[in-house]
Length: 354
Length: 263
Ligand SMILES: Nc1ncnc2c1ncn2[C@@H]1O[C@H](COP(=O)(O)OP(=O)(O)OP(=O)(O)O)[C@@H](O)[C@H]1O
Ligand SMILES: [Mg+2]
Image: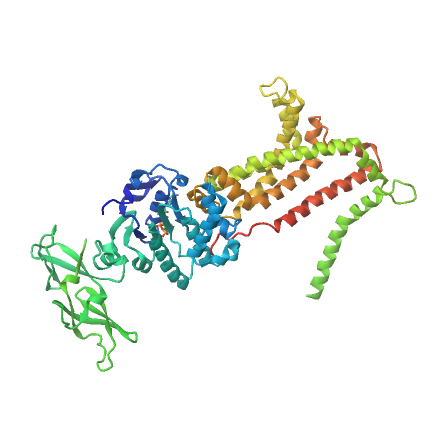
């Protein structure tokens, strides 16, 4: 990254004796859309609130466009924020809500009016200017809240689970809309969510958080296919985890249930006899041999679930169980529980979890 | 079902009679000043009395200052407690209830001892000072009502998130209180204000002991020396109080609807 627009450096936050954010680091490029993804209570909101200025970091600093803003008050940061609870001002109309930041900044009335009209166009609610918040649906309120946040042309847009109070359909359409507006305006954005599909579908990069730390920061593709830690692998998508024992670290050889697997690359930092967790996505595994696969393991069918077009099969390999999906085939009967079966995969798809 | 309804009406009628009969009797009595015919003579005398006008105006002005003082103290305090110090709310609620428990006469004797002309804060040395002390005392008496009204108003909005939404849009404390918080609790503030008004207009103890020309002592004085005029005065005072209450009702229709909480 050439010059990060937002740089969160070694930030820590404690409330009394409990530390909720620990050594958090993140650089965000100009115009980038980064999601914070993690389970409830992992500190996503707390980091976001420190960027907004509502909480002061116990240590570390936050730099925006080369300027240290760690101690700046929220109203001096020129940051836009969208809250989970919409937080529109109930006593003001839609137009007055959107114009609030502009009025506070002392903009002339004519300029405010034209900017508000422009914003209403962007969020595709041009007829709503004179309504009050209570006259709007949740999805409309949240779009107004977005317009209000971006009207003063903030340098940074922060969204804290903006979609979680909405129903599933609105959620999907609004997230696409947020993303397209964000791209059009080129505004650097942080989006907090605990919904992995949401994060995977709209982000340039995702920071997966756990216990107050960024476990991994990467593109959705990297996060899904190359999870760096056990937590990330488990949290994002479904994952099969196998226990293995290192037999030859330099050659990347591991034994799983008395069967040898050659991994791609060396196992740095491990020595023979160490146990390792190996992970495979269900879609990387097939039942029986398949072209392109270079590794197989034999086991026994443990469970078969016929789901219609898909059959979900669980195969026991020693103490491990591996889950995989096969497509229904009208000419071949599904596997039977207790049968011996081989699974195959490409060794490049096998991940070593640390 | 039918009989339940019947008894409900009986109870209602009894309650209404308990309330209205003395009222009607007072109205009737107040109009009997002229022998043998109903008239508004008593009202004419009362309203024409210079002292009525003077003391009533005095109390109205005192009420207005009391309301201003009360709003200036209570709105920021209740707001700050909801925003930053929710843990001290029970303590504050207790303190605001004290004026209901401690008789006004105790408070005013305390004032007289504390702020006499020889004290470091000689409020009682001048007329203006005494007036100010009276307003302060009234604000204390009205505190339980004002605080509760404002606090209830604040409960209907998400104080913290609205504050943060305004802050991140660049607003400072002044803007937040005047443009976001106050408009959303205005109806609550007004109902607190009218309660304050009703209390101040009829207050006797403090005004009398501080020797102020207020409406309460005047009421008492007339009541002790005349026959028909006190009844007329009572009806006038009653009408003013009711006027205040109906204004609260009317204004509450214009309360901004709260749409903060996603449901
Ligand atoms: N003001 C506070 N005082 C004490 N503890 C706090 C405070 N704010 C947050 N915490 C704690 O910090 C931890 C992280 O909270 P945070 O709100 O950042 O989580 P989150 O990742 O946003 O979770 P969610 O997905 O549920 O919103 C939680 O354990 C919470 O209890
Ligand atoms: Mg949160």
